[in-house]
Length: 241
Ligand SMILES: O=C[C@H](O)[C@H](O)[C@H](O)COP(=O)(O)O
Image (cartoon, rainbow, N blue to C red):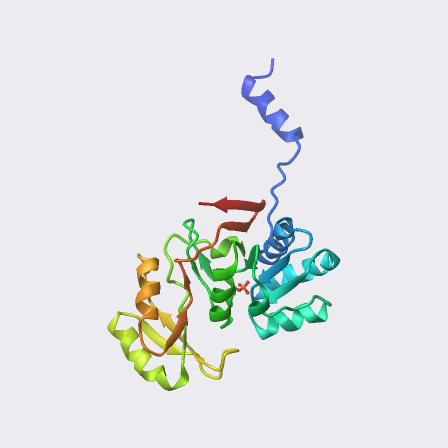
């Protein structure tokens, strides 16, 4: 008679293999870009961010462009991509109500606080996010962090104030680096602040904005995301506060 343990191992031998779905970072970005379409309603104007994840969303949006009224763009690059797809780009000043803003992030916490501006579009992104009723963040799982600050925090600065603002940031304990050979769509420069461990993003966002010469900084804490569509190995996870 066969022993009990042997019969178990025979069963294991003929079992179906466990299929583990592993999505690459690019596949995760593509999945959240598709998932964000559920927040696009017929006849609405959509606010659109900047970056590689948002670019994939724009490509998805193009498939249903006849259903929307148009889009507001957070950068010249986004405006160009929208126009290439034949999607009308509207000025924010002509839009009284913006139901939804869809954009990526460089880092995001489960509290929906973000660092943005890796592509230098932070100021226009922050303006559109302020107007929008709902902010949908689309990101792969590598962007989810417990504490913000590993990604250098971008600060947009009026060019003549660059050295002064850098000294003030150093006094706050950050290490600013000038993003050389880069000018924002608003004609300004970017200082990236390294080695921050941001325990109070709401307070730091305000403190940095108080420095004369700062246009805005990449902390989106006072106006964070309402929904995070996060790409994971297994698919899209929806996170809200
Ligand atoms: O200025 C750029 C934006 O804040 C982007 O949303 C951010 O850098 C994320 O971009 P990506 O989707 O390429 O990681």
